[in-house]
Length: 160
Image (tube, rainbow, N blue to C red):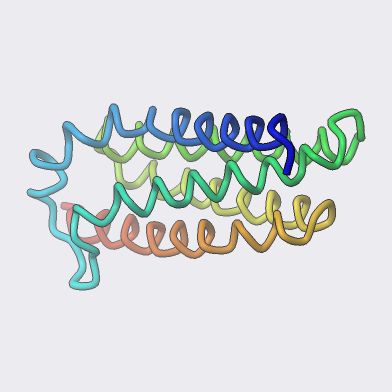
């Protein structure tokens, strides 16, 4: 792989990690205060697991985006796929704001369903451009599926 392509791949991975970390601005302060005081289901992963998992997922997102962009930015299907990718990333950050920042599990639950749909659309559109790019995002939708279930239970278990 040539240096230019390696640099582009690294830049896209760093970009995804950077954008994804915006959500942590709202998440980190709420973990030891609000989130730890909520009732959670027994299958809730330990808090320490979330950071490494998200870094891995953002890395996979950057790799996937790289594979799609390598097919040619000027192609309409690539531009459409990247737009859908950007939309799911917006929903990803918005979920952290709703759930942790505003401490609104119900609204976060509605929003995470939109996130899940946009991830699915991203996987489908990326897969049509580069099968590897679609497959790489499967851990992401699996993790968000688990997060959706956790969000649901936090809402149910803490509703008056």
